[in-house]
Image (tube, rainbow, N blue to C red; front, top):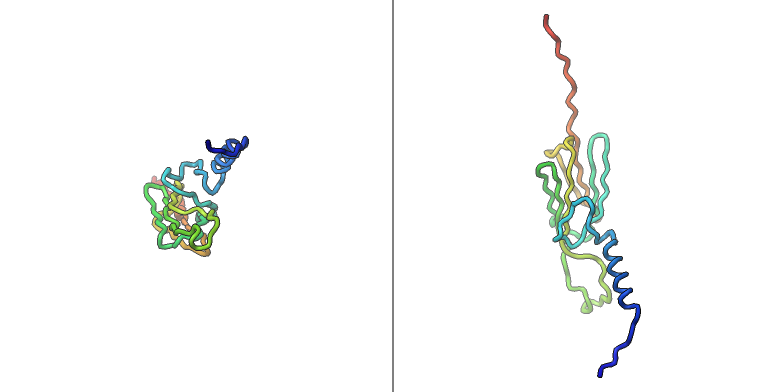
Length: 147
């Protein structure tokens, strides 16, 4: 007969851990439908509107900028990439690995005023910045009526 230690709070602790994972902003899916179920993690983003442009800043530390794919199609901006896995468990002296690894995927619907032809992106210290210029406003033209 095997002797097992009785832990009355183990189920409650398990439920608590699952609830924490559900509401953790680093791993919880975005509520705007901008992620896919195949994403392993969701980068946090800030979106700002300036008078002449929109700016999206995404936290992607540890992601090689060459591994980030940004595309624009039918008014939807897509950002996807991957933070590579490395076996960092016990063999490299790590006792705990908490940083999320794997692929990410975000989508943003852009307003009609966005100029898709002039979008630019840069990465600095783990922050991806995407600049989306606004289209120049068409000035109203006065039409004279001949009579």
